[in-house]
Length: 344
Image (cartoon, rainbow, N blue to C red; front, side):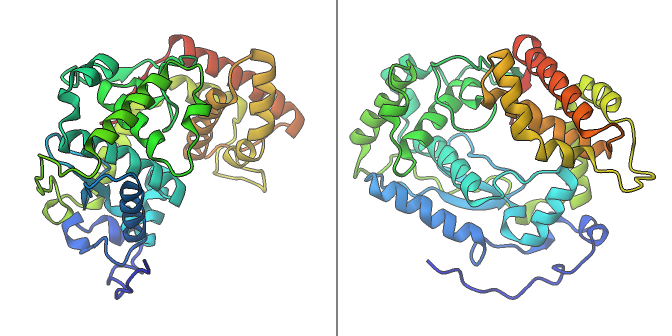
């Protein structure tokens, strides 16, 4: 479906400082006419092809979430306009759901929550026996097991392991993905039983109306009175708490020059990005760890190096060798002693 054109908002050409002083409720954003509109329709098409009648209602809020008891999906406001995505990138250094592929992955995940709510699937005995109890308290942190085959791999950081509700949502997202070959991909994995249960449950609810039909919207954008500056201060504080201190210490040893007088030196973040494939493969070869695992560590190190404004001082060859050693150490620290903060 082609997006409808809308008049550009008055703040589209505003500076970052001007934007940060605006309240979220004053952005006057809509899903209609944005890139999100097409993606929400695509999610509906994917559900229709599986004979699932529920179409989760969607609204703009501050973050991604699907509320308890409401079969709907809140979408982060910044995805509704390129100017706000640019600000999100500057403030957080990444855009969750910023690409079409990542956005669809998150939509399918949240749709899993909405469908579980709409059809009360989590109350079924076979759901509880397979995934656990949704009443289990969400932990502040969870320690993933990267080598476990009891869970599907969908979102980063083995998110299916965070909680039974996330396990189901991730399994549903893998099942719903178009042209997926989950039976082959997860052959001989215990996680295959979860996918087969999702397939069975979706057959049971096919072409049936959901018993829970609430259209409530929790924390819609128009009711959020915080300024963008306040919003990002909270978000940066939360993200900062997740970043291990040893990243800063070791990165500053590897890249001791900051951005004050760059003198043409390449940034550490740029070097790590273009060396990412080489480092990932080398560390995987010598440690036996999966490239997927190593890539997660490399990505966070790159984001932190950018935030610290670090630059190269040594030769590329020497820096790459030391970087491989650092990534090896941090990978092993994370897997065998670290904890990952759950996204709430």
